[in-house]
Length: 188
Image 1 (cartoon, rainbow, N blue to C red):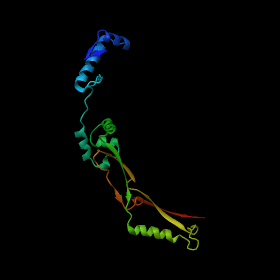
Image 2: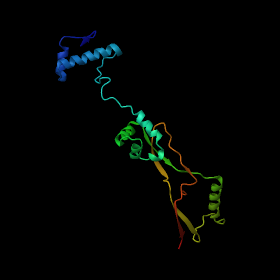
Image 3: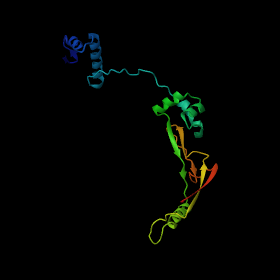
Image 4: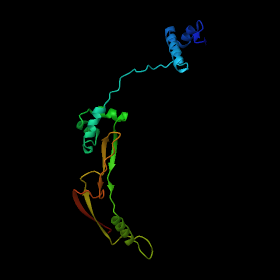
C-alpha cells in the first residue's frame, strides 16, 4: 500500500483496525520502519530501543581481589565471598554470567619407572606357569593400611576465567598420611 515510501490514503486506518491498535501506534511503527529503511535498506521496525535497561556493573576491581586470595581459601563460593569481602549473591551472579568459574583439582599419582616395574613383577609372580592362570590366592594374607588424608583427593576452587586450576602433586593419592590403621584380609 506504499509507493516511494508514502502510504496511500486510509491504509494506516485499515491496518490499525485489522490489528486492533490505535492509528498513532500504526504511524509510529511506520515511521520507525521508514527510518530503518533509510539506514539499512530493509523495511523493519525494531521494537527494542537501543541503550535501554539497567547498565551492567563492572566488577573487574572486585574480582581482582579474588586473584590475591590463595586458592585454598576459596574452595567454595561462600569462602571466596568472605575472603574477598563480596556478597555471596554477587559472586553467584558473576558465576552465572561467566566472569568466574568453578574448577576442580584431582591429585595425580607420580608413578616412577621403579613403581611400574614392581607392580608388573607382583602380577607376574601370581601367574601359575603350568596353566597360565592367576593364582586363587587361598594361601595369601593381604596386609593393608588405611590412611586418613591431610588433604582431599578432589578439591574445588573458585577461579577467574584466565586462571589455571592449581595442580597438586603427591607420590600417590592413597598415601597422604595423617593417621594409619593396619588391617589384614585372608580367605577362610
